[in-house]
Image (cartoon, rainbow, N blue to C red; front, side, top):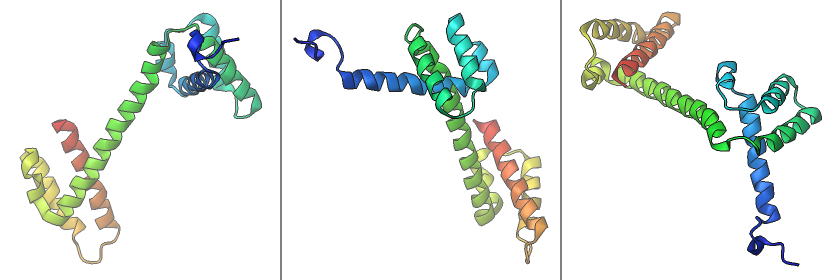
Length: 165
């Protein structure tokens, strides 16, 4: 009796990994925003089960629903379905990177002053605003006004990065 991988069938371990990946896909599809869900190329039954899954609270019934949806996804175009959660995740990564860059720029502004804006080609109005905010943030004693100035510097850095990228 030869029913191992040599017989053309994947091993039991590989089938378990594949099904776990389908369950993860089902979970990620359930977490997508409504607008993205409507664009998914799903069959009617899969779409109904996905909508049901979205309404379910965590627990055993939800886990069973995830397994059912994973089974139904076997009949769908997996590659097309994986693209949506990946696109959402990639957009979130880019946005996070943009926010981290804005934090670094704000910190450079606080350390180096207006000279940190040199390479960005900031308009004169934004340079003037940065100068005002830097003076406010550097006030002795700090306080709420300095904290607000630092926040506003962050927003300014974010807008500068948004224009340059």
